Image (cartoon, rainbow, N blue to C red; front, side, top):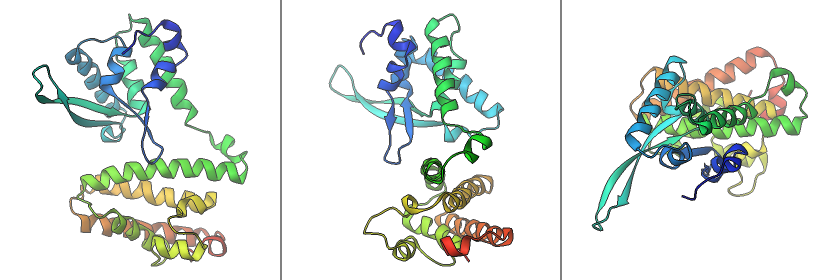
Length: 260
């Protein structure tokens, strides 16, 4: 990797250069790529910083697996053979914690702390700020949250033994939408083939789905679900609970979303 001068690090370009974005639009970084930018040359020493960051995450009662994912890569060594190399897939928050636990004597660490703190804050929004958004802005904001929520839910569902993700997601939709699958919802909305139903929801409907997503993930972890059937049953149950809560709230979702 090229030598990075102070200005590049200060304006965040170097951190953005190594940023990856998955198919769901979720940003992530690899620890092996972050290491040289934070001016660590030894993986063993850098991994100690990662472990401190993981402990900080645990102490904050935030799910470690949502922010630090073990990944192994096969790399070629001098003889032409390959060996397995350990790495971590990191969220922006994980990068922030790593910077917080890095060598404070390094100027680049202080710069990284500032950069990731600011960028993490940009992903948040206060209740007052949200209330002042237009419907389109609220919809865009909620869509971004559901996209990230679905990615996190998929990782948790995979750990719970889910292999058929269409079946798993339809279980949740059927609970929330009174028996409708994703295809049923798409047809009701008059969508074209492969058009995403989440891209065609208002902010309130997206918020209901986000609640379904986050509560399902929490339940899968809390109950230590370990089979696909249990995961699907859990998702369906949570969908029904959210549906019931909406009906009890007495809001006019029926006309707009056909929940009731």
